[in-house]
Image (cartoon, rainbow, N blue to C red; front, side, top):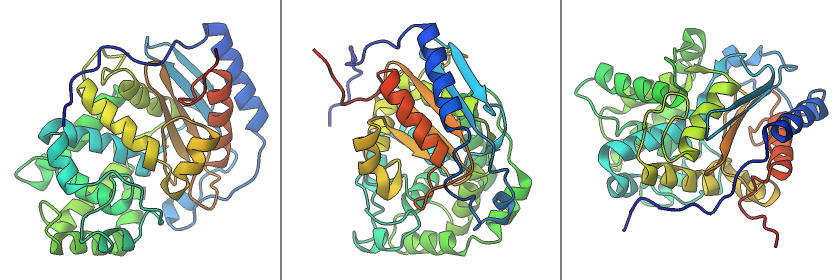
Length: 325
């Protein structure tokens, strides 16, 4: 498959600074008091999150930052880490080698489903559900658990432009209830689809999900993908442009779990969510949005975050499928 670096992009520019500020003001004020959804209860360390927290951030490809509300409140990255680990391992071992291990099609089933493995002879369908994400984490290079973890945390920190740290309480809480992920890993190992020891890979996956970020960090990580793999704040090329493109394409079809099709229809911008209440939304060539609000819908997506993303997509021209003469 040809993977030449693109020389042009199909997107235009964001509106001016004042228009972006006004759009963030409107999104924050309009949805800050929305009380639909519930805080996740499956993980005890996440269950006591303040349901009233709400932050919105946007960072454009020039590095300009716009933040509102609780955009600097830290929470664990959870499943949003899947997108960036996928990019890191694609950068390390190549597009085709990762594709052989982890597919790119939507499963149509919940994120922790075993069916997604068994229906395809042990081949995980995509890296945004747990089975595929565990397989992707297993591709991290290193001779030991410590070396593989160092690769992951350094890479995720480069996306964020700062050193990220693990929330030990969340890590311990999730580790104590990890039987389903361990079962997925052992099943993958039995099918020959997992590199490294299964339980060690699950431990690394749990640690990566327990890294602390805020909504502004998510926007920085997302804009790095939107900017051809270059972090616009540090100016570091974190991954190559074709790898950034691959990652955004996977987010487009699978980033919001079984609601990915509905998300594209209603919002029209690649995105990834996590059960702690974060969402990152990536607009190629323009910028990225990070949101945080712990109230989730029944698919595990932040209610306020979804509404804010939809508003910003329409008001700032981020929708990939919208056009005008």
